[in-house]
Length: 257
Ligand SMILES: Nc1ncnc2c1ncn2[C@@H]1O[C@H](COP(=O)(O)OP(=O)(O)OP(=O)(O)O)[C@@H](O)[C@H]1O
Image 1 (cartoon, rainbow, N blue to C red):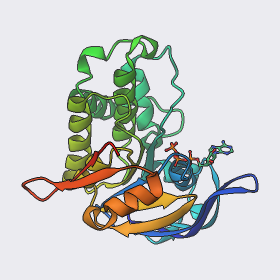
Image 2 (cartoon, rainbow, N blue to C red):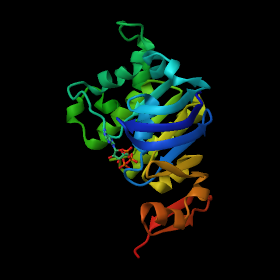
Image 3 (cartoon, rainbow, N blue to C red):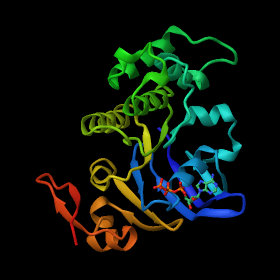
């Protein structure tokens, strides 16, 4: 379980600030979805939390500043799935997913049986067992996406940062993946921060939404609070209807103007 807090965090490339003064509390075990139009700064914010983009302000994990953690400690606490990962194309799926175990191994040590068992379990849960021996370069787009998620889940970190995890997945695999993340959250207490372009899926899986536009947080709250017709029109320039399913979930559907 890892709680995340951001205190006036700005993400920047050199001097160009692309996410500005974001303050956010994500309690341990919660799922927060960061939504917003293209270029809003969602990915950059996630990258600043994992440490691959420079930031100002304070990022706290369980109340402790990340700046005080070693790279290895940070990798045990935070797992990150980028939107467009560069994959070591020659590696097999198993060897790639085993990389997720690196933060748990002693320096230069080989993986243990328990590490292989974690990998096998994750591959099974992500419907990848049949592809375990295949080189990454031979996989389809959706299979690669699932392999990336498998590596992240094998890391068994308390905080999962997932940047558009369902990109390229068919509706069934998207649902299976989000269900799996949700199960990990319930069973192992993982905390999840994801970006998601699909507003209906974000409403179904996240407890809270954070809407960014132009590098700033412009709305936060429950899906029903954030996803109004006016808000979606204002920030996405989109015409939508907001519907509700029988069990009270918000559905955002585009309409033709
Ligand atoms: N490596 C980089 N160097 C400079 N600017 C960058 C870099 N990566 C992203 N940006 C800029 O930062 C801004 C925010 O980009 P970011 O990828 O964080 O947005 P996003 O909300 O995730 O968008 P999308 O929904 O399109 O993925 C954009 O203006 C983008 O052009």
